Image 1 (cartoon, rainbow, N blue to C red):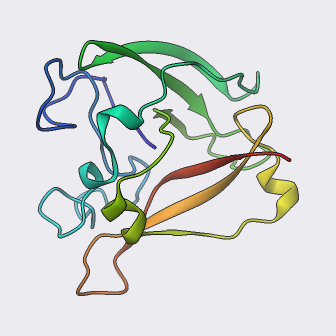
Image 2 (image 1 turned 90 degrees about the vertical axis):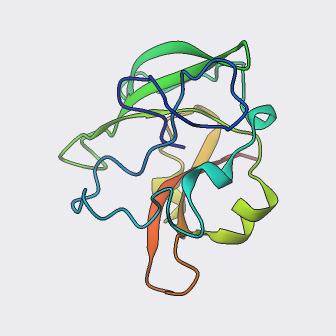
Length: 159
């Protein structure tokens, strides 16, 4: 999931002792003033995660997409944040972004997301070696079926 701009936060989880990670809307959304998944929407980004779902062990990354690995704390536990970029073979804009990895979503988070299909060959070109990716979108306004916003990627181990 997309992590944070400068990696300082004012509210990933309500019970945080150390607030160093913030869940933010897609920073590359062309309509930056109208994020459907803002904290005021019925389903919002913070509802996807619980602190105990965050992965603490770094994964191997593709060399041409990896920029940096930094650590921030959540409840006194160091969490790796991957600074990445899209390779030119996927996007000519080569967008930069940051990710934190989670092993699972909350029950309500699972109910509010949808996986978007991707051609297998493209999905195998993954930022994380040994995994393929699937984009996930979240219905941020349960009253409007059109309010789907990209919120991250699901990475699945290759069989």
